[in-house]
Image 1 (cartoon, rainbow, N blue to C red):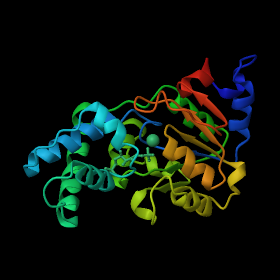
Image 2 (image 1 turned 90 degrees about the horizontal axis):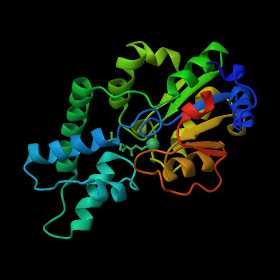
Image 3 (image 1 turned 180 degrees about the vertical axis):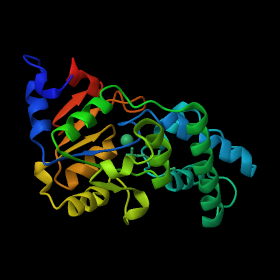
Length: 240
Ligand code: XBP
Ligand code: MG
């Protein structure tokens, strides 16, 4: 169902705002798909592969998700456990390379669907020739592992800009990924809408001046999101 065809719903104002935006800028993990459990599994497989007796359960991973970026997350956990010498940069880099490989393998094995409403939002935007971009803290190859199976191998040609963690100096909650997207789109921040699922994402986009629509995800479903344009359970709510 097209956004333009939905009438008399509590989300009319939001739908209009989305339709009028200069561009939609989407986060990936938690927003486009519930990937974090696959990231967690990939981290745990990497710890086994390298012979480290760590295992991240859901509770500890929820805390660790406050730290954006896989390498930074490993380092944060290493500092928290306070025993033994700290892991070297080389070991952290190796662990993260294995984790990234495991993530791709798990995605290929299991697949991961887009969250409700994501495909419809994208198709609607493209149908009205609205630009769509990606601003993420994950590693670039992870975006391909998610989007190639669901949008096709040429998925990147459909996005006006794709900015990932390694393209910028600082990860979310710094505004860098959003500032880089805005510069590539050559659009004023206030004309765009960011779609995010986390407090770090909300901060990053807000610091760049981009209004934010939140979709609640597995790990951040009970967070408060002060300052967001709106908070949805999922984007499917825009299409009912
Ligand atoms: C996503 C992340 C990422 C992934 C892991 O945050 O923080 O670090 O959890 O990816 P956001 P890497 O959704 O706010 O962009 O291990 O590739 O860093
Ligand atoms: Mg996210």
